[in-house]
Amino acid sequence: MSLVVVGTVAFDAIETPFGKTDKIIGGAATYSGTAASYFTKDIKLVSVVGDDFPKEQIEQFHRHGMKTEGLQVKNGQKTFFWSGRYHTDMNTRDTLDTQLNVLLDFDPVIPESYQDCEFLMLSNLMPSLQKNVLDRLRKRPKLVVMDTMNFWMETQMDALMEIIGLVDVLTVNDSEARQLTNEYSLVKAAQKILKMGPKYLIIKKGEHGALLFNEDQVFFAPALPLEDVFDPTGAGDTFAGGFIGYIAQTKDISFDNMKRAIIFGSAMASFCVEKFGLERLVDLKQDEIEERVQEFIDLVQFDIALV
Ligand code: AMP
Image (cartoon, rainbow, N blue to C red):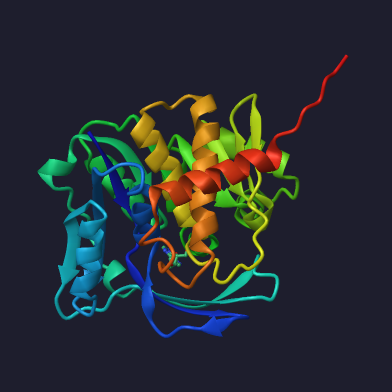
């Protein structure tokens, strides 16, 4: 019984008002898998990198309990590369460059040892590849969570709609929800997206928290008001990894448990943004996570006696 995480494993170059990095390790599956590893140790990665990808990083995946039999290393090819620049408010960013490289002819292979997958995280990746992975699992997982991005809405909308129609939970940010539906109201956007297939929708609103929708319920989780946000890259993937990691740990896919999972996801994302890249996420202690979750609880707790 395991959590399979599929998505990009990448090099990123990031510019924020606080500084600039050369190529550092990034990728949606890197962030999601690392965040999930604090909740479950049975994580199996599906992705592809070129032979320029450092072996030390693959060892770090192993230290976090991630199995990498489904991570293909392609000789003579280059790893997926993304570069982005954040604006002063850190809530918006421009993609400066996306080089698909090794993703272009990636054919995901699902090792036999992955077939017992109980939870599937389709982190950001080419939509047709997300669908390939779902199709190649012989048994449908108990819960399929998917994340995506404006890039795929602009380049592969038909394939994106196909996979959106097959998942249980979709996570997108507010501008992506609007782009997907042509609706400004997030409530109207949510209603439209839920008609596309997913039973649950999470709309991430950066420093303004996240909303969880299903047919007739809505839940709101705040983001922690942090003094300094250093680099938001990967926050969405980290959120999704914490969310599904907590669900995989508790094995409970009820709406009430998803509310708890959103708080754990938000707590993990709040660590992610404190430093560049993966830096803050790799050596977290369990009690740091618990303290952070307690801060979320304190943040929204109030007493009102209605007469
Ligand atoms: P987030 O900040 O959560 O949206 O995720 C940022 C991560 O997504 C970076 O580490 C990138 O390597 C990765 N990424 C950027 N563009 C794409 C894309 N089009 N498909 C998949 N992953 C991407």
